[in-house]
Image (tube, rainbow over all chains, first blue to last red; front, top):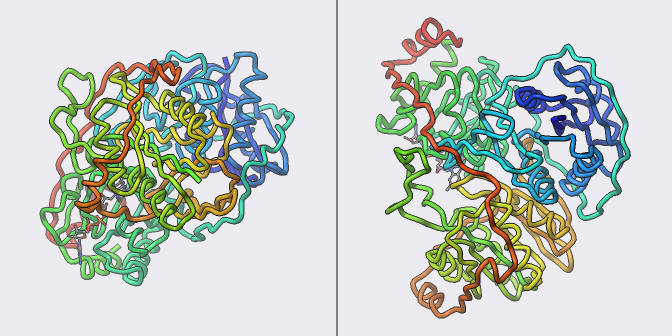
Length: 313
Length: 249
Ligand SMILES: Cc1cc2nc3c(=O)[nH]c(=O)nc-3n(C[C@H](O)[C@H](O)[C@H](O)COP(=O)(O)OP(=O)(O)OC[C@H]3O[C@@H](n4cnc5c(N)ncnc54)[C@H](O)[C@@H]3O)c2cc1C
């Protein structure tokens, strides 16, 4: 039996989420093969081959994969599963916007269910996943021959190095030609990625404006070497770009320390950060629900408290 | 051009659900039900395309129990022209819904299907992508901006690193993210008008679709609770606690 892990990468390197997905794969039993669908993805392939526990890296290289379109990537995964002669028991991808975009297509075309955002593995066919914004955990058993799964990366450690997988080039599928990438606007930042950061400083509507957010929160994040996050309200109000959003429908994070500043603590926000090791809340409203999940709560005006904190750490 | 918008009846986003003590699921008896918020955004987008003269008809579809009629009426109050209820008491999983929608797409021949990116009950985030794959159509998920012109759509998508813009050929499936639009409130006259709009009810069997679930839920439990924390008096105390007690600084 083989567990196929779909690598998320930018050709030059693997995305960190792939490493957590490999760890989830290692809990299922069987060989682990990583599939890299890309265009001149040598860097990503090399990194995948070094991962502990990975026995094979399959490489489908084609200029058509430059866009990483869901249609093309799914078609390639389907071809690999088909060619394996039923030896692939599981297909895993990280539950990132990349994995969520691609894997349901694969499941539908295999005529199997897709199991979203698993946080636990009970056995090769039984998995735990959050529902209702993480207010309940469901244990589900799949009756399908191939299990197609996205993995919540915060629930599994990152796989380390130490492997020496064989690398096999496979024939790329033809371009579906259904969609064309016109452009990407990626947020550039010298700060750590939200998904990988040990400390996250997150701001909500209480920040009042994008200028305040930058003037008040960014210095604290810089001093702590932290990533910056936000509530939906802060993103909707245009204080920060969309990829800062933490929550049920944004990013799921679980850092060592999560500082929620001027965030009320709606269930949709809590869904994205309540697995953090230590939560600190700074809010001027003593009744804000965020205090119910905070390890340390400070009732204060953030415009006074945050600069003090920046000076003190 | 016809737009099809699937809408799901879910527990209202303001309700904090309770897990049933026997572990079989969450208690949805007597809780407020509403249209899935992402689907409301989808209906709004479709109606705006109609108001802009791009679309000619907006058809709302719901799959589930009889009470989903209310969800369809809400969609029609926002501006959908008619509703189709695929009625069943059976548990419907995303693959089954995608197959029902495929059968309806084969019949109705829409140019665009606009779905919510995820339902806030099962948080699956699958149906739109599955439908697109089954139809062999392109997809543009997690949309924050949609422009439709002759035979194609230009869609800006929210992705982990920022934004990306795709051009897709029609017919296609688009799934909505939060920032695509702000749905209007249905006015009373429009709610009254919606009651008179056509609503057709069919069964999964009429569409020849087997909706048998593929996943069995063995149990549903509450997640581990965080133990109650402490309130600190000032920043100095907070820093001390973080350094000495939590040891995270
Ligand atoms: C379908 C759906 C999906 C959603 N997904 C998400 C999601 O993924 N992530 C998410 O975050 N939200 C999400 N939401 C939105 C969520 O319900 C809340 O509306 C949002 O989280 C509120 O953001 P906030 O806490 O910043 O704003 P508010 O609720 O307005 O809270 C602002 C807080 O700032 C405090 N404050 C104000 N001024 C100061 C000051 N000077 N000093 C200290 N404190 C101050 C106030 O006391 C208040 O508690 C979603 C909603 C829906 C319907």
